[in-house]
Image 1: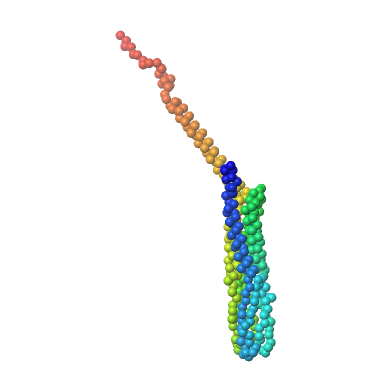
Image 2: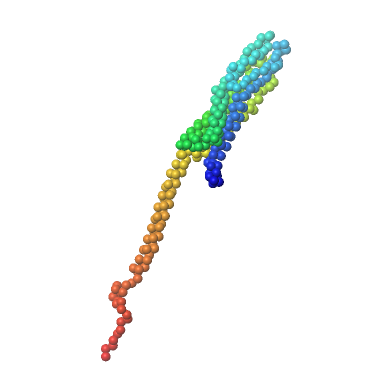
Length: 283
């Protein structure tokens, strides 16, 4: 009974690795889409006109995910009376940001579902080798998506930094083109969380790409490849042992025959097999 219990409690040797290999993508995916999708920031500018009544020393420009910057509008003084001009930021990085967050969300959901399957449905997962094959294909696809999404979002973040640079925004204002007015940046946007999202994006790519090998070992392709390599080795070793055995048996049998044939026979030298010959002296 104890042996049976031990056999039932014994798990697949790679199951523990599979469980830990999907827990890490869950956490990394959360950090990736949380740091990007939950971002909101802004900058503050000041325009000091010659006529102080027309000045505005606190111009706030707020922007957030999905970074459709061309839709972010704000009003600034023209330093020509009470007139105001309405401006908008330049650029649109929503496609790369939304693609990155979508990949992160779907990777999180798949990793979460895979964790449940690995832990509670291990037998179903290995039935007909269908589960490991699907897992292998999905892992390869997500590795590619993480690489593309992280690269695209890194380029999109670079564009966001340029478009929200206070120096670039000040160039859009007509009042700042007059040297008599003083324009300056009071507060610059903080991009630390967005930088972190790019880092987690590439970490997710490394993690998913590294799991390709471990998931591949669960498929039938890996076992069939090992079997294909082991069969020629077994045939070679068996043929070598048989040839060695035949050579040894031939050598032992042939050696005794050669020794027997090398012994000179009495018939060859014309000698009688009888005793020593007696010589008679004639009288």
